[in-house]
Image (cartoon, rainbow, N blue to C red):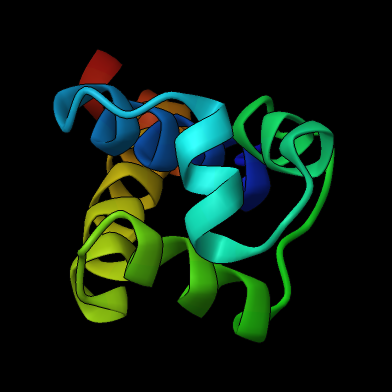
Length: 94
């Protein structure tokens, strides 16, 4: 199963680290508790649209870019999880 919140957290953490920012810096800029941001980055908490916008602003990233990156990761994970239908397996064995 693909967990959107885990992939979102991975993207946010990677973008924060790419920018050389600490959790404390993002927390101060976004006005969100450090602990809550940490839980979001670890995929343990869901981020509301307002909170996500604040985090993206703190990271100087367009929200659309973050959502696009997460969407690409979701599509990749879904493609890896696809199981061929039983008729496809029988047809390929023939």
